[in-house]
Length: 312
Image (cartoon, rainbow, N blue to C red; front, side, top):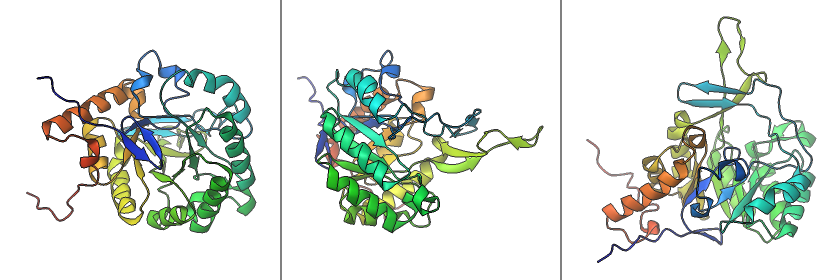
């Protein structure tokens, strides 16, 4: 008798995806770049590179630096703007039977609202991931995601303008990420993704200058996984909406850890640069784990962490 494949579908705020593996914004381009290496149709969802109202050139190079356990980036959210994204990027992604979730960032609530409306009108996007790790220029440069009130305000305004599932992406560079998570949940978020990159830097000791022109950048990759896992575990216990885990996920074992502590899905980021087929390996690995443990569905695994269990 042929083995029955375990069920892999998960519900992310009303968006049903075929498996819990997504791509992380900024690490998979707009899908086309990875199409020669990945069967895009197998992905749970594609989260696009961040899109803003107007085009952005990004920061001055050098803006990427490898670290012993990951990478620093200070790309500066380079993108062609929402109008070019709709005209030039979305048509390709529309060819695949996979949900497209557009990552959105802005420096004012008005710009968040405008981009939300434009993307919602296309009918080619199945969800929005709102990046609140950006500075609010009207509030003196305070990061939206560092203040519960501002995070909630963005969420409320975006939700008011769209019927699409709204995922709020949280920054880890805060005192208590759970307070931010609770604020966006109360404001109507359908799901939460975390974590974005940790702020870091690197120094050229011979020239005594920063490796990055921007001095600081976002640290991603295996180095941040323990921090990301801890934050996902904390937030998943505090909110009643789905949590998506991000941070240093390079293989199926990493992804399984996030699912066990309560993440409903995961995003694969820096690993795509090391192994373009990482997402495919992770999907296969999750399925094999479920078979090994006689689980008929991935939802049987999610949130099964026993924090009071004994250790050796």
